[in-house]
Structure formats: C-alpha cells, structure tokens
Length: 247
Ligand code: NAD
Image (cartoon, rainbow, N blue to C red; front, top):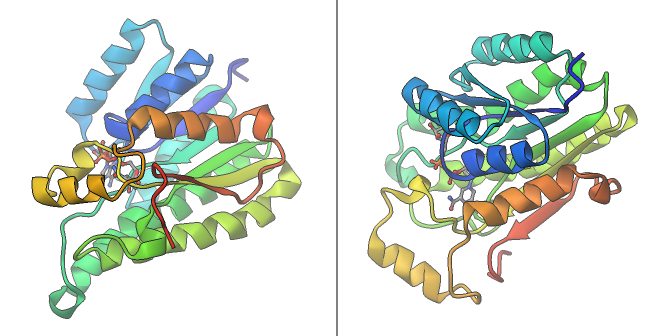
C-alpha cells in the first residue's frame, strides 16, 4: 500500500477541480485526476508534475458507470488505497426552460450532476473502507434557491446531491468515512463561459462580499472538510457564497 494518501477527484483539469488537486498535492497527497478531456488531462498532469507533485490522469466519462468502475479499480489497485474522493465534475450543459425541455437533456444533466457522484461513491467504498476517508460532494446555491434562468434540471440534480450527502454520511460513518459537501455561490470559472456579462454583473451586485468566489475559496473548504480538524463534521454542507441569501 502507498504510504502517501490518495486523492481521486473528477473533472479536475481546470477550475475548482484543478485548484483543489493542487491544494491536496501541497498537503502531500498523491493525486489522481479524472476528466473527460484527454488533452486537458495531459496538460494538467504536466503542470502538476512540473511543480514536483505526484499525479496521474485517468480518462473517463463519469456519466458512464462502467468507465467509473474501471477508473476506480485502476486507482485503487495502483495505490492500494483511496483516502479522499471529490465528486467535482458537473455542469449546466446549457439553459433550458422546462416547458420546452427535451427529456434527453434532463437525463443528461442528472447523469452528470447526480448519477455520477452515486457511481463514484459506490465504487470507492471498498477501497476507502480499508483506511477510512472522506467523500466531498459539490452541490450549489441553485439547490436551495433554484438558480438562474433555465437551470431546473441542474438545480434539481444538485438538490439530490444534498440528500445523497446526508444519507451516505450516515451509511458510511461506521467505517470512519465522512461524507460532506460544499455549496458554492458564483465561482468565476469556465462553468460560466455561456453566461452573459449582464447576468454576471447583476449577480455580483447582489453578493454582499461584492465579488465572485475563486477556485481557491472552494478548494480551501474542501481540504478543511477532509482534514482531522473537521473530524466531527458528518453530513455537513458548507455555503461558500460571499454572504448571499441562499434559502
Ligand atoms: P468547470 O466547467 O470549469 O469544470 C468542470 C470540469 O468537469 C471540466 O474539466 C470538464 O471537462 C469536466 N467534465 C465535464 N463533464 C465530464 C464528464 N462527463 N466526465 C468527466 N469530467 C467531466 O466547472 P467548475 O466551476 O470548476 O465546477 C466544478 C463543480 O462546482 C461542478 O460540480 C459545478 O456544478 C460546481 N459549482 C460551480 C459553481 C460555479 O459558479 N462555477 C457554482 C456552484 C457549483
């Protein structure tokens, strides 16, 4: 078994995921980053190894349970342990009002944002049970307030992630596996590449902190939740939103 702790993080070649990978690497973790984008994966690994970090890339589309299972098996067998899983990959996939939404769109959004965390959680448990560990899910302010226009499917999926966090927290704490979540407001990443500048500016005015969140803001909370300092936090959700009302 590898002496160093192992982080497996999905969708981690950019944005919150990549920044979180760097944070854990600085804490001495060996990093297994996943993404659906192979080129981005190669570049992310070059950056991590260039800073002297121990990191590998695992290509998988996390909406496919067989790809997740194969990836988790590869990581688990390579290192003999998986200490932290961050279910990070997610996205809006566009904005669609429910009235005209295709069923296939609804299903794709739920596959990415809700089913994938289920597949990954189920797959890591046999490895995590050996050493105990942490699972962090990323939900969203949209799970509470319904979010901006045309994101009913995303908001619904992220609300499901909240319930999944609380239910799995109870199920796995007997194995010393803590499940918690973070709930960002607006974080300035490529996630918002299709969001209009006007909408973004309007949101910023409504944030008491008068700024968007950064990937570091989120990465720091994720790391804290997995640390020994948070050892009695079980099924908790940390809001990271600059003071926005979220209910
Ligand atoms: P991002 O779009 O910058 O990064 C998402 C990553 O996931 C990308 O690298 C992408 O290639 C990868 N990905 C997409 N589909 C995938 C798949 N099927 N398999 C594997 N990888 C896949 O987004 P981000 O802002 O870094 O968001 C990270 C998480 O935070 C997401 O779960 C998102 O819903 C959540 N979140 C973001 C915000 C925000 O304002 N940015 C707010 C609340 C919650």
